[in-house]
Amino acid sequence: MITIKCSACKAKIFKYKKIGKGRVLNCYKEKISKDYSKRKENKIKCKRCGKVIGIDQGKRIRMKQSAFTTSGFKD
Image (cartoon, rainbow, N blue to C red):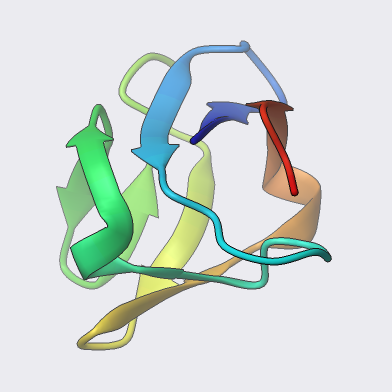
């Protein structure tokens, strides 16, 4: 389980069950256990500062690499 946070204000965006090694490029919706984000149309935004974190593409969210940081257990 990892926590995805906004790179600008460090607010929590998701608690996400990551499987495998490597970067977070996409977040699959079924693996998000807790969602703290704000959504407008297909954009996923930080609840606190409003920075765009990713784009909703149906079953997954395409993450913007410079917009977030991760913490927690990573395989």
